[in-house]
Image (cartoon, rainbow, N blue to C red; front, side):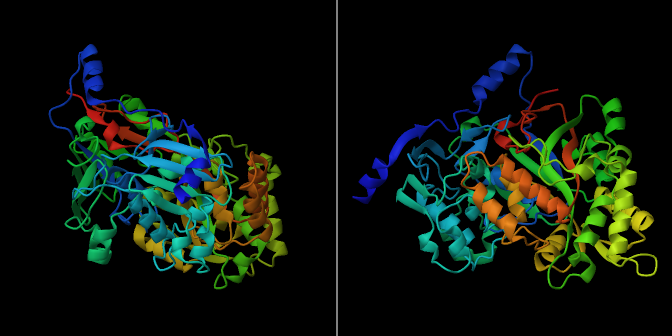
Length: 545
């Protein structure tokens, strides 16, 4: 009876993820028409700044982890070259009339790397595991943002994980129930947080299940090496359902902490992809026009200011936070230091986000001199000045680019506000731990959208978001965020939230990203039209020189 009822609620089969990936035969044919062929060696070497922060999709955070997870795991959808949804494990999606119930028909041919079938039960286990307080996932809030039924109550320990609005109708039918319909729900399903994971491997090996000898995956690649400080490698997964159309055989993520050394290795032919050193795009584009690339990236670089109980008293004062917000000349940062087409940021959400219009902030229209004057006025009113200077520690993860920005902020706040800023660099994993624990004063931060809709940014202002490192807390913002989930068009609410956050100095946004990088012209299939820059190795291939 329950199955009949569930099917009876479904009114339409949604045309979601119709874009198909090109098959190998088509690619070979298109290359032949251009007089080209596939290279014999289908190995690419990508640059990596540091060791992976995590491999487990249920507990990871950071773009380094998600880039690798997209290659070794697979969820309901992927994206094409322009960021459109593309079917992965979900071959059909049906939606109920009230848009609260989604039913996904899964590929029956999909398998794990140990040969077991991928089933709807694997999704149920994975999703319950993320929201379970015992897991302490930094992305546990994500399922509440997706409005999966009972997610927030479960994360807060008020209901059992079995009450989460996800269930397996049968092995290959997954049903998801939402508490509130949201129009961008399926867009959120490209996040690695929503990937299935192998319950049996986790239960057998515990925290060691992600070691390469224990790791069971369902994506087109599997991890074959994870040598700390050197390289991590993924190779073709022969059990992958579409392995016959996968062209790349191996991807080496080569760890080079010094970006200038990484560029040298790229130019020597040792790497096929590397981010550019800060400020080098104009020169490199002139010298290597076929290899130097830049494209918008749905990320924002910002400074997190601690507002927790253990924070310095100065940072609990909105006037101090606003002074720090005002006194940074973003144009000089971009034009003289970054030089990669970045966009000055006075609010958090990236201006290239689909459908989004930024709030009208008067201060953003002022001259920098006027912003500086206002910053000094606010600081004086808060009781700080030459006889009582601000003094903060600023922490960032090791990178030449982050270091240059840290030094710039130190100089800006010293010269304009008389502030004494001590800067300290740490490894990426350490920075994540410091921010999670609230053991900082000022911290380098950045956020990349998990999906292309403004809520992926503004939801971080919610007081209960696990990604709200500062613990900024405003009940009006919380209420507006909840209200936005019920609106067919929440764009005005997003702008209102951003305006409140700017007025309260919730953070110091610096710039909206672009990504200047060097790419070997022999590597084809890069998603230049995808503003999230989600790339999938199944789309990539190398042509013979």
